[in-house]
Length: 297
Image (cartoon, rainbow, N blue to C red; front, top):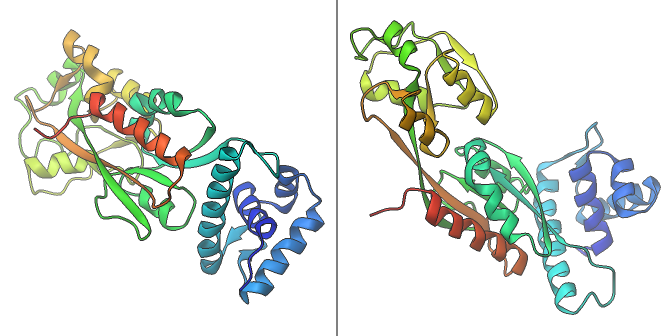
């Protein structure tokens, strides 16, 4: 199978942008040229690589070639920049990264700002227990994840842990837990949940009691708005210490169970590539994590 760079770039552009027209604009060619390159790539592979839907989606075979396309593009760009851009115009490297919402809102952005250099970042927000799926399908080159087991073709570095506490306003606690939080007392208490993948609140409840509950729940799929919902007394929720230090010091948010908490370990997973751009992002993330996250003693 012979793979040409312009065909691989066309595949990357189509699956990133979602349409042949948008891919053509990105690569400054015609939609017909994009179509011809994709067709030639599929003929060379002997497989259908993209589903001609809106948006265009990769087949299982297409995902495998997409990973290769993005690896080749990153390494080709790195080499061209080392050579001073000889041979073709070279822009900054594009580094897609999957990040959980709480990390994105608290410590990741300052880290990436320091790593910017010859890179720009395409951030994908996803729950830390699900970011590895984006690595598997080639959507991202790196991910902040709670999964220690490396995805095939990736390497893993531990970052530390984010501490979460079950918090609510004092008035909320007084109304719903007049005799104190205890096993079985959560069943009818309003709860805040990020989305249906968010299991932290239920993990806390399971630590208190084995009794299953189905409480009234507000779904608030924004890290900042989630915190606001708790501060407004709409319900209780598991909030990271990095977001609530001032609230807890002022007493405007209190722990439902004294010192109850859950530490969520975080890891940096990335493709095994000798890429200066990807390494710079990894180093910046590790440096920030060392000061912001809980580190093993």
